[in-house]
Length: 380
Ligand SMILES: Cc1cc2nc3c(=O)[nH]c(=O)nc-3n(C[C@H](O)[C@H](O)[C@H](O)COP(=O)(O)OP(=O)(O)OC[C@H]3O[C@@H](n4cnc5c(N)ncnc54)[C@H](O)[C@@H]3O)c2cc1C
Image 1 (tube, rainbow, N blue to C red):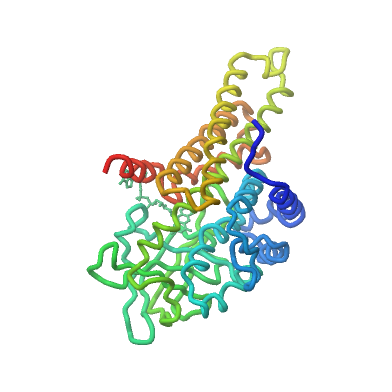
Image 2 (image 1 turned 180 degrees about the horizontal axis):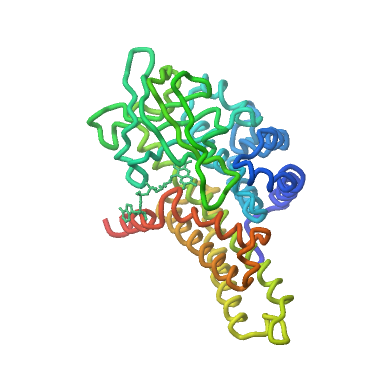
């Protein structure tokens, strides 16, 4: 089915993203996978190409568009290229909204130009060794010392953890406040007592620097409070819908790409004297996956459209997230099987899609938490 949500301008932007991937990402990707990290130069190149801060006002060097369809185009093309390691989507779609919607004018002047040029790479640190799905269990504390906070605690699984120059840290600012005792504090590279731990050894997304972060008596100036004091939970809930949609957008695009590649593969590969594509089982596999992708695509495009108009609610974003990421898991698993032994070789994109994609049903809120959110919206 022909997609109907994009205009010529979106498609022109798609070409810009493809050119960027071909020139600045694909030639270096294998090296980044070996290094466990991408180069800062690629971030600066993304800044020069206008791929960072699409929704940031132009006065700070951003793209100045609230139209989420541009972000969707970028996420789709990165997913199709299998370039999960360079987390522009996290920077733009997940962290960007916190800075554009919550920062004061002074903070915007301080952070947004670097955010858009690629000189300030960002991360968000919610998860702790003892608190992931249940953010109320956060133990990192920030003690009020008049003109600054003293931050103590540790975070884990933080994307861009090694490269990040600016980290939004979720910390407890009121000991007994439960969900209403958390605030967002911005910690900048070089602040004394802010240390990075290991670049974690993962089964996929090898070039993504996912790391532990430690905060030992870190003095965070009062000017680095982001949003409302004790207001983090509400800020997180507001922004998580876009995070979930962005993950879903990448998941369906990645699934479609792998299905396309597998379709070509089964037409070429022969067994028992004819192409695999002539076997009924293979035909049914492709037919089922194509149907699932087409149905999911229709829902996702509607979600993208709704979100561009500011109309997507948390429950529908959660539906998109769990459905599309679980679909990606099924598609990559069954397509890997259709590749036989070649599917297990890293040189075949399906192999990397299988391992890179596995995290998608976990981060940004697990499938089970998504179902909790949807269930609550219907039943409570
Ligand atoms: C590669 C990677 C990148 C990440 N990037 C970031 C990042 O940039 N910033 C950040 O803050 N975090 C990040 N995370 C953390 C991620 O968001 C968490 O791992 C995720 O939210 C799950 O938390 P957890 O690992 O503590 O699992 P747990 O919360 O311990 O969950 C374990 C299992 O229990 C299930 N479960 C938990 N509660 C319920 C419930 N109420 N009902 C039913 N089942 C439940 C879960 O679904 C899961 O299956 C990242 C993780 C990874 C692996």
